Length: 98
Image (cartoon, helix red, strand yellow):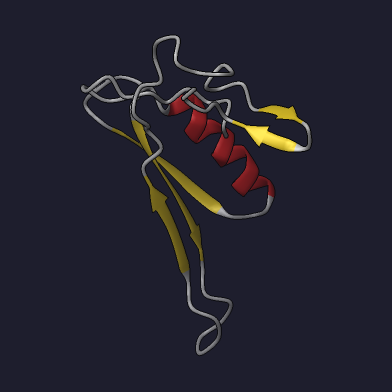
C-alpha cells in the first residue's frame, strides 16, 4: 500500500488503483467489497464488509477509511516517497530530510 501514490492536491486524489488492490486482497479472503465512485473520476471510496458469523455470535465488521494523503513533493525526501524501500531491515515510505 505504501507504493500507491494517492496524493491529494486539494481536489481529490486518484484512489481507484489503491481500492482495486485492497479489493483483490479482501475478496481473495472471501470478504465482500464495494468501490463507491465520487464526482471526481478515479477518486473512490473502498468498503469491506465482514458479516456476523451467526446470530448472537461475533459482530459484523465494516472497514471504511480514506486513502488519500497529503502531497509528497519537492526534493526534501531522503528516498522516493512511495518507494516502499527496505533498507537495513527497515521499511521506508519516504521521510523528509532534516
